[in-house]
Length: 413
Image (tube, rainbow, N blue to C red):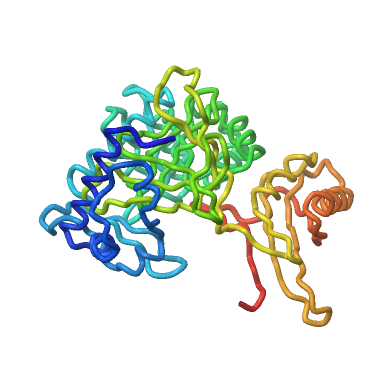
């Protein structure tokens, strides 16, 4: 998908404004002799931005407006290094709320709905984004934040919440608790807006069935406003994204060359009107594809397919490149196995070889030994790696209120 004339003008204006601001990226463009863009070809020659550069600019090197125009900051978790701090102007905050309200509307959510918000507040972009979108829409926001499941379930019942917003991990925990406590007939949920992490079809089906709700994938990342830059419509897996605020291209993660619409690759995002911290060609490391053609729902906004994983999620065992999404796909083919799993990788010094252990949950109605053998053979035949498989009862693996870590690499780095 190519930049249209208006988008090209917006990118050109962003570059000129960045240079004028003398921000981190403005200096980078100036040193590279970049003054703007006037064609798709020139745009595709622009350097990529990535999270490492944002960390290099810590704390506010990417700020492109004077301090008096910044009304808020948000930040990434910083679990893998310095956090990334993103400044927002008043217009940025308003634009984000508009995009989020569009997401709710696309999911069929109206001002009559009561939206229970379980993602975290504070520096993280999640909770406040879900709330601002609800208020922009005119719906009732129930700003619970994460944790305190007893209180969550009480408010869900007492306030007749009709929409739940959560990570897939916390939605699973809530579904299991509602099932365990026999509350299914006492809740009034109709829809779930789920974001922050990739989730398997098996988990999706379980949450939808146990809560009796329609599920919607919401997309976003801290560096690009936050959640709310795209969502799927009813009956479709593709997520509409708001191309009046963002330009999205898909690149080959190895070569950096854009691929054709319909081909899978890494999502790269350019903010067209963001003021506080504009980003040009930001590499997200999320893997997906642009779905060609117009959606049958009639909306003209372009679509991204479901996020398949991250290019930096890959781990290597015995020379084989593997992704968590591949394991999730195989779990879906084994009877009685839940969506939850854990991968441990270690090095056997005595044998001088890496070992991979896959821990999965299974229902009590199936034979655990047979299930382990079946899954072991399936992984071996599909991925050319033989894991040690441990099967445990459903509910044994930890549940998370945020994102669930799947891969634990114990090898010496």
